[in-house]
Amino acid sequence: MEIDYSNIKVIGFDADDTLWVNETYFRDAELEFAKLLAPYETANKIDQELFKRQIENLPLYGYGIKGFILSMVEIAIELSNNTISNTTIEAILNVGKDMLNKPVELLEGVEKVLTTLADDYRLIVVTKGDLLDQERKLEKSGLMDYFHHIEVVSDKKEANYSKLLNHLDIKPSEFLMIGNSLKSDILPLVNIKAHAIHVPFHTTWIHEQVKTSEKEYKNYKTLSSVMEVLPLLKKTPKSKV
Amino acid sequence: MEIDYSNIKVIGFDADDTLWVNETYFRDAELEFAKLLAPYETANKIDQELFKRQIENLPLYGYGIKGFILSMVEIAIELSNNTISNTTIEAILNVGKDMLNKPVELLEGVEKVLTTLADDYRLIVVTKGDLLDQERKLEKSGLMDYFHHIEVVSDKKEANYSKLLNHLDIKPSEFLMIGNSLKSDILPLVNIKAHAIHVPFHTTWIHEQVKTSEKEYKNYKTLSSVMEVLPLLKKTPKSKV
Image 1 (spheres, rainbow over the protein chains, first blue to last red):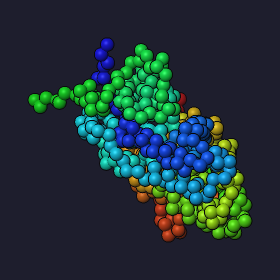
Image 2 (image 1 turned 180 degrees about the vertical axis):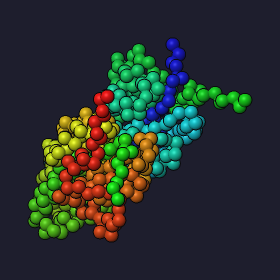
Image 3 (image 1 turned 135 degrees about the vertical axis):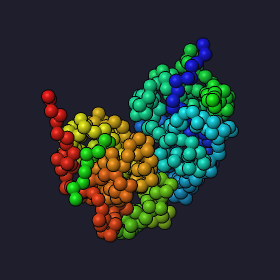
Image 4 (image 1 turned 45 degrees about the vertical axis):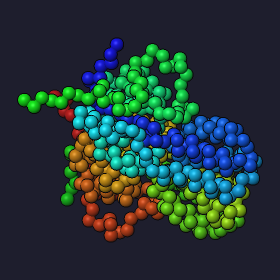
């Protein structure tokens, strides 16, 4: 069955790994962290413990780089049995600061897509990172003017999206979400009968991965590049008569 | 001149120290931090250095508890000349976690005010803390149902409020902000010709304090309790005829 996109009024774009590179920077930071802790543990164990601690801390710290830094400090102290040096802790804090200062690297085709769709739809950014960090990236990206506003949500579950639609005063059928995470950007939308288009990024954080069973029989499209949304969404130019 | 509140459609409430106690918890955390660093410096010096570092880190970390924790760790390492123990760093991380887990203590009259105004206005929360932390507090507060939604802004300057009004699709004269910080909740609103009512809290973070010259000749009211907004804003019940 062809999906009917003709009612859509607002398009929400995920930010990290949909508009610009992000997960790669986390992977790089994890590699640096593992190097700093190499005297105490294997890279594999360090990775596992850091991941576990991030998940444990999520309810308290939420998503984003600051919580990631705090989790790294905790794990460094624990895996070193309270012997990690102040210098290494400072180095860990700097790994975090470097992440916050990273340049914004747009994904291919993003600007073309936004220029084209901005005429026909209200475009917004929907992200669950730190607000300040996301605003900073949006500013650096030069994409600010394409978006009506940025919605930072504390999580991307059905309830968060329902609240968002309520806040936007639109029906689910009038909203399309475009993003790289099946778990966060796609399935919750499909479940509340809104539209979703999946554009995978080459790296996905394990916390965002979903089991195959959850993916089946779902009413959304998967595209290999964001450019491919254009033939689906571009409206025919109005006749000049 | 009497201020005319009759056009107001949306009322924004600041959260911390307007709806519930917050600054007190930061002051308590600073006292604990000074105790932990007592072997290295005087409480006064520790306070000063922590404040300076928070301001320096604001552009990177933004407002909220996580940035505060990270600044404490940095200062602990520096003031101890790289000799602070892992145990003390863990204690500092726990001071932060305790702050995030604090119960929510509503300020007097808040619930009465919200119940009364919710009939006549769209109420929103406008805050610059961490989104997750603010949502958690709103949930714990039991006040969620009074608010249409929560707006977390990265800062509370004129540009942020102008963007907010644009996003809400209302004119400045249709918006009233109620809050405890002259600098963040009042003056920027007055400058963009929106309404603002100042309800001071007994403690103000030094970063939020403004010089007297900035306060003069400004078109806003200062009340000693949030309860006093009711006679100004309560609409006369519609006649039943």
